[in-house]
Image 1 (cartoon, helix red, strand yellow):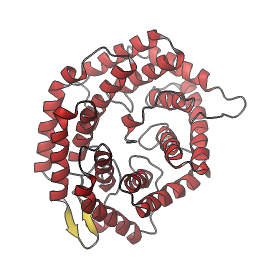
Image 2 (cartoon, helix red, strand yellow; image 1 turned 135 degrees about the horizontal axis):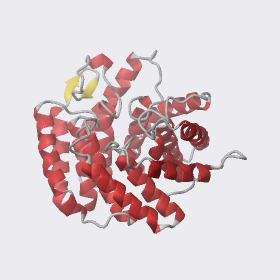
Image 3 (spheres, helix red, strand yellow; image 1 turned 60 degrees about the horizontal axis):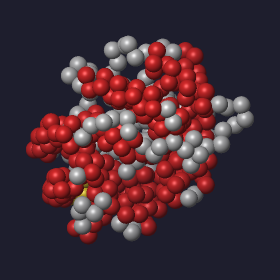
Image 4 (cartoon, one colour; image 1 turned 90 degrees about the vertical axis):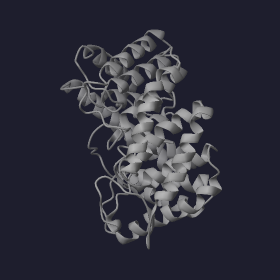
Length: 367
């Protein structure tokens, strides 16, 4: 979707200013990650290079990627598996876009081994749900790898799918998986970052990729969706969180996608009911907590944009435009204040996407 901005709004100017802000701050030590670190800056420069047609920005993207890699051993904010899963998806994205000249298979060989050990350990500890720290977060990395090299990684993905089926906890509400921190079953975390939606979305993506026969995991999916629905019914008075990664917005997306892939319209209807409620709430607000992907305007804009493209429903197009327009104002304000550039690169990437730039949905869990 290409966004039509209000008269007087100039996303191109904001995007250019974001580029300059990154250049002016590149001597600072910085952080590693995609959301607020050098990986995110590298992705922005890649998108900017593609958007402007200037190869110099692709070269800068490569430089910033190298800087990100140099921070792996020194950035204490790194979360495993999330940040290494991001690294894997970014390597493939930058290589395909022409910003990196590497063989991802060779470059990521050590990461492959490290994350396989990490996934096995997480499973042995019963840390399953959650893309941020659970076994499915490692699974997300190997799903990205399997898309590019199925011969090497399809077995790992298949084994994880079988393990998820075996380790599902069965109770009267349905099937669920252990999370961090542990919570009572009736107050379970349903989010993508730390909860049950991550398992639903990963298995959905695995089924869609044909790495696993969808029929073999359908019974597990049915009980997982039943569990989420049961928890939602038990908490009708919940406060609806618009956060993509840490709220029910991401849960709704997982259910919508599951219904589409498994031909279960009732799942899609449940997911879309959540997303539509979030959209209506979003359209009524003029205040966003931040510009980020996890819980801010960038994440909401990209999600509603994606949902509009796969459903065709205009409310999501309107909501995405609303989020992009607020993001435009937030970036303009932040660039004037300039206490830091955290969240600025990912906001710039979202603005480029709003103008019809390269699709980077897979980098932000929109699988």
